[in-house]
Length: 282
Image 1 (cartoon, rainbow, N blue to C red):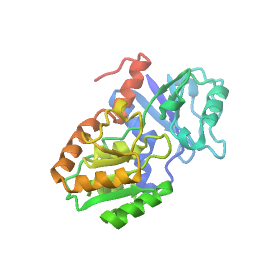
Image 2: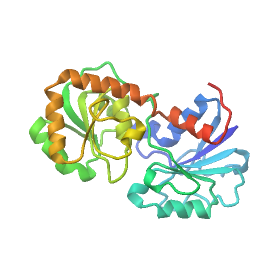
Image 3: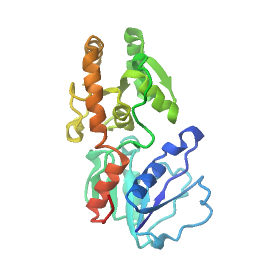
Image 4: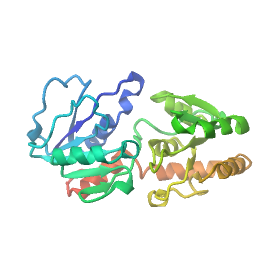
């Protein structure tokens, strides 16, 4: 049993090991399944893979601006496309790739896009790289990531609660930053449930995030293992409540950490193999 994973290599050295292709590779190998990574920027890029020597090919490349990903229409093994960022780009490019390449299955990170020949495959985190660290939580609330559409909410939290802003902090520094917060602010983009949800609870930090109707299906429960808000007033109220109840923050963080073990790459790979009726060890 062998798997080939297609994705461009990470462009930032500090974050490269966190790239989805390597996280997925480690998860498959945990179950004893041989996995290779190929794509633009990898050392093996200039040597075309022997496609049909693999049982499964998984295409993770969501931003192929130079059209380097070859058509897999004549590749005979089982072909999977992981649509991670359709909430940003729209579903059309992914449907075209799947159609033109005769893909067998689309993994949709966003459940609204699930149709025929696709399944919901939520985002997750790599518990080999991200965990609760033995460092002090020196900030009541913080944000680590790209600001994008979050600037207004971030500015409100800075002015009212002295939010610690760590913009574009990546790799292991991201893990340390989130571990240093008691509460980590997040705002999903549109209908997405982004990686930060899972990375935050995996760090043992209390998650404060914008509401999504699919949270309950994933086990996220407001005021049990996270805090959710639907508007700015609710966001402020939740932060004020949490800061005035420090034991509640600890309870939410601990419950979130327990939930995180259901949302690792290993968990996602196991569910995929069960869906495909693939035998595996462990």
